[in-house]
Length: 404
Image 1 (tube, rainbow, N blue to C red):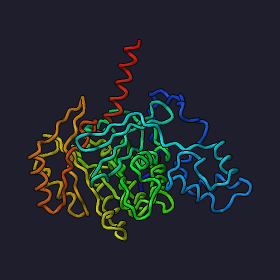
Image 2 (tube, rainbow, N blue to C red):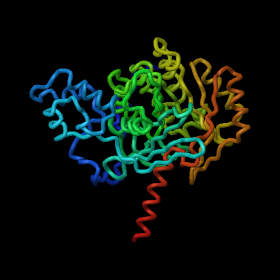
Image 3 (cartoon, rainbow, N blue to C red):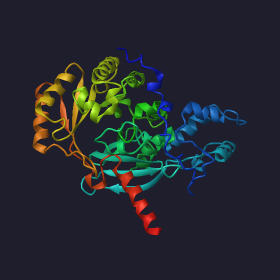
Image 4 (cartoon, rainbow, N blue to C red):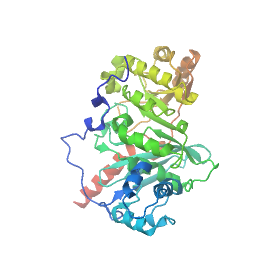
């Protein structure tokens, strides 16, 4: 089956709106930003060109200067754009601002250095988690969210307990990179100097392929040579299995793909990853094969697909399932990440024992599929996706109750 034959509604974020039973998002503002002004963060070079084209005396290169100031210099106010004509800056200041979002809470693990941010936006309910995971000394990977909440309800995922509120805007996605990039000294960018935030993974809250238009534009800014200028090989998009979306991702050429698989048969995957009822394993594997073929002209890292498999004791962790997993992936350039379950309050699952996970890994490896065990990070800062937001909201409810 061609992955281009699915209806557009399967990909359009407007087809996955806020739950109509939920109240509309609050329009309350914060004292740190005039919400009547638009955010420059999230604008592409073409959008900036369109924005300033009618300003009298504008130069053809001014839009590129502004674009570089935003994403390569990391300015946080329009006044910092020193060589932009005052007439242009005055026009921008009247209608625009620069905003990365507000850091609501900031937790750094003393155990492994994992930093978990809760980032808030215009409406008080719009908060998402963004996590920096150090890998090589001070350098590491930023895990970015694409939606407030999630509509997919995977049973092992804490975000699955939080109903979808809305899609994140391009600026709200990019802001999750800009905050740590500024904090860790990556901005202003310096040529030939390795960055501290040197990988981006769309593995936070939400389904990236159900917010495709905004995720795509964010990736274009992240990889633009005059923007943030990350190599495409340094960006990975994770999906729970939106099979038709893989064709659109392939058009970007060279972006890494990760599939949240977690089961080797439809009966179990229907239960723990409900989107499987729409895009069953056979359909998903066909889409993955086509994605790998489309990446043959790109780097080997993007051709190889990562399959994420959370280890749930007595659910999906039998040694027979290890054999089934290797057999399922044998014809696809693959790498399996085995992920010990990160417990959260109220969950029905526990993680497979450590030695059992090692045994499972050896079976998959022995059958020819490269495998890595991703031992948990950030357990002491509520590392499971969605925990920090829930904890913060619960604290707010307790404070409100105590006040009442």
